[in-house]
Length: 334
Image (cartoon, rainbow, N blue to C red; front, side, top):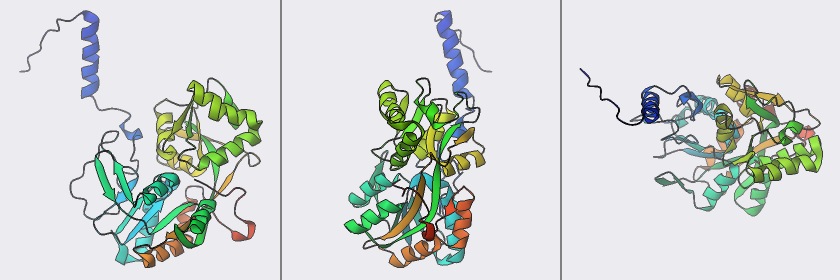
């Protein structure tokens, strides 16, 4: 028999303590909104040992696979993290010798470059490790820049294009219908940080098309200063999370990210941006100079623009890159 002790604190305090206890003992309804969102499918390891993932508490959502002895290491811009599981599965179907031997990271491209410049050394929480990529994937312009600087080896391999959208909570409580609405004082935004995310250049260009310099300044200066624009460190995780938590009303992302969230059944929707206000990205990759696994890197670079790979990308709204037309109006920097 459980002994119940009488609360001797003031009434309001007792009620608050009781409410807190009930909350602590009841499973949270919002646990599903926290990364990782793919129930371990973005992990290539075949022997996973102890399974210990606690969303919001102990979670390495953008590091995937087994570091013990990988045969291929990929650094991939995080805005298609959700496509990596089916891409890796298809690659391993075609090349079974690589089964369970891929490791990949899906941080923002600028942070991946910082890790590369640190010799592959990275720290997350209380853990530090070193891993050097065989191939790097970001926007075509950045890939070409890094080839010229000697960090990457030619050729640059473009494969898909993508466009922007406005990600919103499913019920759209702020009634956001256009880019112009984002300048409103009452609209709370989660926006990529220009210090980490190349997508900002495309977003600012789109804002200028929709509302001139005044709109771009409002979103990225005035609203940042007054706190109604929150700048994210990793927009492909934080923007949908903040929207689902009610901490933001909207955020500009790549359309594929919104499509994934909707397909995952999360309380997310999106507002299309007209073509004359939008920006298009070209995604590309290249081998890292002095890669430890050059043959594997070449196999992935051949695979990434193959028919089966493009079919996977198309599930999330990407379109195949076509060199004849340039594939895009604004090369991607994210």
